[in-house]
Image (cartoon, rainbow, N blue to C red):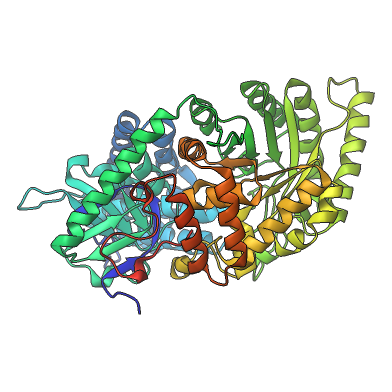
Length: 601
């Protein structure tokens, strides 16, 4: 039975916060339906521009504060909002509403922004939907300024204790606006790990939980809570014992950070001498430096969607070749595995229009889009062939469900190589092609796929999602999304065995490998190459150096016989406890909380 004191969300910024609640309601201010006399129109337009100028000054100040506190890339988050406030077409349409309909400045601005919000939120374009949060970031302060309300947020606590701030939609402005010493943590109903506010919270080192879909109405100002930004848990009115144990848990987390520092520069090799290739997943160019700092042995997954999202045109062949070459040179001597465009689902660029789908994650996406539109895929293939002479560049195909998709891609690679050769371009005449195994279909066909591939890479995020029919972004189902489900483990074993039989490298590039218990399971199943996010590289390196692979193999054998996720967890923890103090890896639950707060793999 679930514990009514526990709220489950999605952890987006790690760390523990203990303190009083402060609920901030950042709803749109009430705007009266007021019309103005013809002689007041010019005055309303002046009021509009005065408020826009005031908010623009605020945003520029927040940008500067972010630059000083978090960094250059994080500061760019505010550029989109500043550009909206400078958009002459947008402001011109608001002015037209004032002039033609004699609306007050606040009424016209509200009308126009609500219209844009409705249009963008229903768009099939991921970037437009992302801009809804940016729009809200200017909508509330401009309207507040126009109706005479404060546009800045402050916190006051009589006891002088930092508060844990909860709101419906956490904006980047609010995240930076509040002084660090005022805030112990953040929680919100809306948002995911990729939200701008989540990125800022991580950069500022503030614990944050999003996706608290049923939580806001149960929180009151001054209520004591524990917020766990790692696992997405909020505990209401904890006991003194629970607070003490939570602090102890946080102490172990910091101790683990110290342990990981000891592994820096050391090889990822188990106690019984088994070497593991430890690579990094890279989403954005700025993550390359972090991956290099943490000693990643190449890139196991370079996502290329950032090249097209947010643009009004598609990147050229030369643009892509320049970036791929830069990465290859940065990781000289190590593989750089570049995933072809994983477009579709929630990621379609503005330059590529498509009709909305009822279920896009089961629809037209990834390799299907690339093969159906060779005018998009061909320049990327040519760019990869241009980059390969500069490093060990490989091509990985996402969402493979049939061997035909690999065969068709190989034909395109061969044709592109001939074109480049005839043009006298310095390029490779071939490139290794690998398949991402992230659907049950691909896992069941792993033997046949391995025979046509240079390597296999298991995408555990989607493989788990599709196998269990659980949306990994749904906070309501967070407890059901687990790669430790027996069905998922059976598929993992099948793929690893297929790769070994075909003598092709089989790696794991999903988040599963970042969890210590899961990483141990993967070693036991026979996986010797893992790729994780740059911040997770030190943790996995440290763990590999603690374990005995022969013991991990015994644990994996037990997990393969298990009938429930709980049985799998028990087998893994029993084995890993032989090498590691489990207090350092308290991924099961927060101490003192009922099993409803469990954190499954």
